Length: 73
Image 1 (cartoon, rainbow, N blue to C red):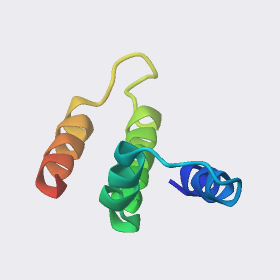
Image 2: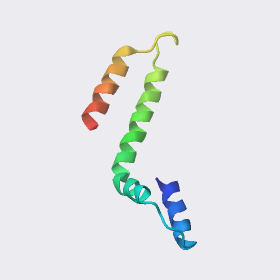
Image 3: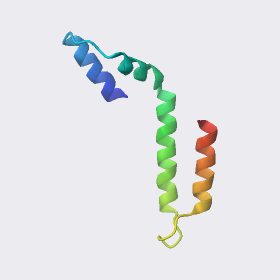
């Protein structure tokens, strides 16, 4: 989000017009949503590290993560 915002700011300084879908996206993506996405990605990394013998994924951990993600969505 920050990279897009910086690009938009630079374009506005150069006198360019910003597309409406970009403005809508910037308005829709708030910091709390980004924090939730980052947390889910971190939790997924934890799940990958907790694999049984390194070969099979821990299905219970994956299941709990999916429930948590569904609740937050």
